[in-house]
Amino acid sequence: MKNNIHGIDHIGLTVPNLEEATDFFINALNAEIIYDTYQKTEPIRDSDFTKKRLGIPEDMAERAIRMIGLPNGPQIELFEFSGPDQHGPINPSDFGWQHVAFVVDDIDQAVEQVEKFGGKRNADPIDLGGVEAGEGNKFCYCKTPWGATIELISYPTPQPYLANSKRRKWSV
Image: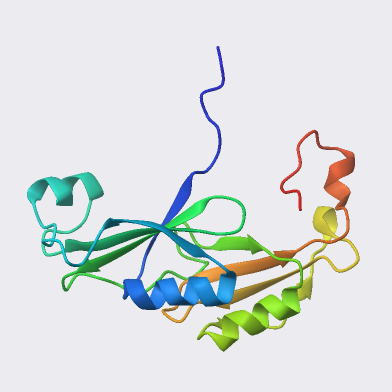
């Protein structure tokens, strides 16, 4: 049987304000707008069908959707909803998709960019260990301006896992 799975196309992310989130990703992580699937100028989507297919509460409605792209890898689909039944972003210890990691060349510069545009690091970048260790291989968890967790990761040195794995995680 032929493999029908090709990889990640996009990651969906709900944000409190589509324009502010777009600006953050453009300025902090070099993203660009690919297209708007659904714009705020269109009627709000609050039909039973929309609520059922998205699995959202009865008092919520879809407000806008935008696809943005990063220099490499999958896209990020930004969603904005309206209604009273929204909760803040999860913490990495909560159940669910907890963060998106971005591969960067210079982790210190990337952290500065994130902070310059409203994000905040949880702590300074630290060395990767174990099967990901290597000179200059580092990661740093940060928060977006609206509180979602992102990870910046850089591995300029080949990682030890490569000696025993047929597949690479990433190639820059």
